Image (tube, rainbow, N blue to C red; front, side, top):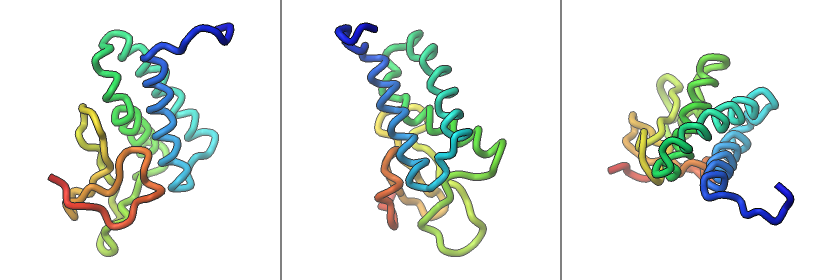
Length: 130
């Protein structure tokens, strides 16, 4: 790009999703270089996916969050840990909807939406999920 070409809507969606997931990683203080690389790997894979199905651009944030969550589980353990449940075994939040717009981190144990993807830095007690 020479700086005069507009960024395509697909690239804009990928960059926005990447930024949201990185914000959650930073908020939970796990944005180390190898973890950021996991985000980049997911973005690269999802670029192909969204090129095949442009209508799925609105689902990218949730999908990339799930990809990173799966990669972290394989290498380090559960992430992000639930900030709502103060007792019992530590458990991870889940992305809902799994494939849909407006993804959120949800605690199924407590039945609450904790934060939108990208909003873990502002998360407190959560709101009842529907």
